[in-house]
Amino acid sequence: MLELDLSDDIQALRSTFGDIRAVVDVDALTAEIARLSDAAGAPDLWDDVDAAQKVTSALSHRQAELKRITEIERRLDDLDVLIELANEMEDEDSAEEARRELAELEDLIGQLEVQTLLDGEYDARSAVVTIRSGAGGDDATDFAEMLMRMYLRWAERHKYPVKVMDTSYAEGAGIKSATFEIDAPYAYGTLSVEAGTHRLARISPFGGADKRQTSFAAVEVIPVMEEAQEVEVPEGDIRVDVFRSSGPGGQSVNTTDSAVRITHLPTGIVVSMQNEKSQIQNRAAAMRVLQTRLMLLQREEEAAKKKELAGTMTASWGDQMRSYFLYGQQLVKDLRTGHEVGNPAVVLDGDLDGFISAGIRWRKRKTDD
Image (cartoon, rainbow, N blue to C red; front, side, top):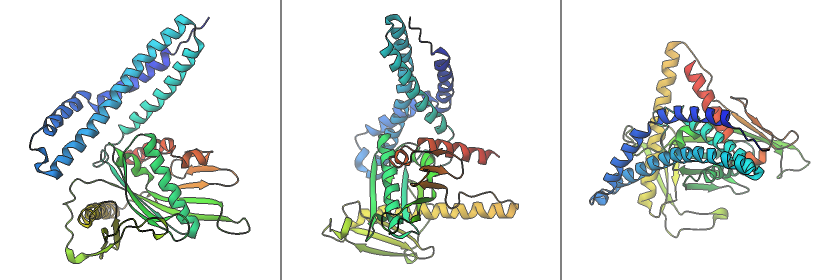
């Protein structure tokens, strides 16, 4: 006789979910959605395009957040019914389905629980991710492209909209750099723990004698700023170059000089944009990213100065925050948290949630210490 009893597991999940619901404040979230819906329905909304985009983007993010909460709530209720049905019908298939659903809900609620730890000033914003190849020649540019695919697949798994803003292809394999935006609630807070230097060790497919090659790529994550007005950028501090957008192998994908590269001369920061259709749009997008990077750089310098004056130094994220071993032991290991996965293929295919959750919890502990 089938007697499926998952009551203790479900009770624990409901308790955790209740805490999450309280932190999210569903009533306040619902009220905010109502306010934004009214604003989005205003007849003169699109008289100011920038303001309209802020309203519609905020509304979309809040609705997605509420949907995530209500969906989990519904699935918890449905799970109770499924277990009752499995026991009444003595149906092992339904029982197995209930066990799978419980495992999925544990994963989803675990992700939500981690999200409640994201209370930084910009954590709730969307993210702009930039990947740059480092030392290692063709292996490094190939690795940079592997990382780009990894993050795009991660976003796809979560059904997050992605916009590739710029890609600089290498002459050999892979990419020299790429910049893309992930438009989702808490994308910045979530992915910010991915920032740092990633290291790949493998038998190089580009070299001879089956030699092991170590290569590096850097990941930068910044928040999408609706208005980056805190940092003024004098025209004399920047150099603006325009060029034609291009794809792999230099193939022209645009017959006009619409792509824009802005170099901030005092810091050497370079931002390129070629996703938009016009030079004006690409320049505006590049300036937003540049202003955000300068603002974050300014804050990092201020924080470092405060630590120096206080006489204390804490470990930074530093280089080689994660290593990917594609030979011998086949392992991906985060050097900060100790989290590791013995199947690099699934990680590089976008299965990053374990690393991200461990990173967020690690950062929270470091902040609280």
